Length: 385
Ligand SMILES: [Zn+2]
Image (tube, rainbow, N blue to C red; front, side, top):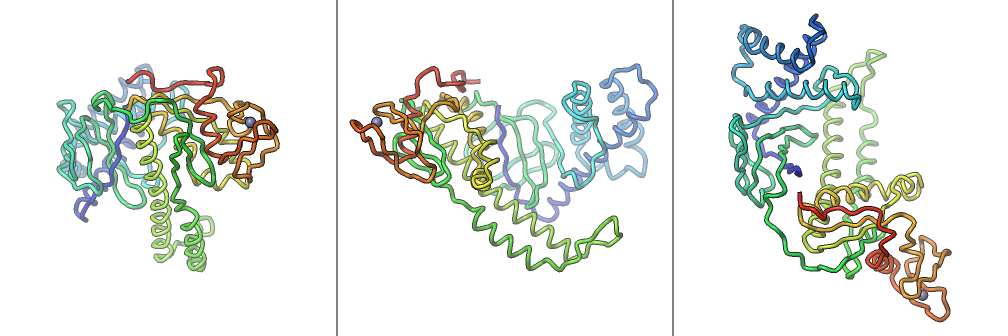
């Protein structure tokens, strides 16, 4: 299973329809939660209690004149809201999360709809039909047809998005261009160096955008931001500024995610067998000099995407343990060069009989490609599921 997420292209009427449904979903969730804590029948299981509350909502509350606004909205939304409440309770009972709390508009707007008859076909193209809601346009087209049942619609800073899960088995098998194992070295200068000589350069949108963001924040420093404890309200202009700021942050995040998705998909399509280092991302982030670069680049997200995409493309992914000296050991004579500094861009072997010289990143990726078995800490993607 993997998820597909697309931005919806909505007009004002459609946007307010989405907002109404998100509000409906939140209302039902809070309604259920409120009655749950009030109900006396503590002997019953959570699911039984929620079932009773749902019955009460369907048969009595929903028909009251003050709730007539719910009649025009999709019934699947409130069914899903009760399901989410049920899941929240079971996560709490298992100790995975805190007890469910009331949702507010600030927690983010989202809701779920599904097709009551089971899986439906989502044809390729620039439109999507959402069960009980209608057909909507997409910003970016779906390249293939998919099959799914449940759709979650959520609002981010720059608009509404739809996401749905797809069964990976339905994707046709892929013929890889390169069968031999390749190593991928991740770096701050060149985002990824692959042992066949391919390099992936990151667009670094964050760095340029960050300067602009700083300037934007500075220019708006005198707005009345508001302070709840002191009773100072937020001015209209400050509110506009907050929205604009959130949109700018979202735009940068989208660019980065888009770059990572494109690279990991390309890698999984091209290579049948990939080896990457188990990066000590936490350690790198603790190093303040590297931290901004590392978190901006999204190494962690890159590895996460490779891990979940590899099985769907039939690609084998080996994670090489951290103790394998991929950058410091000469790949020709196996002598270690412990004095190699991070700033040195060329690897030079210290063995006088070898003197092997090579681009540092390429050398590391070639070392990863030929890693001995005992340094492979885990394997992903040998089974297509
Ligand atoms: Zn050497």
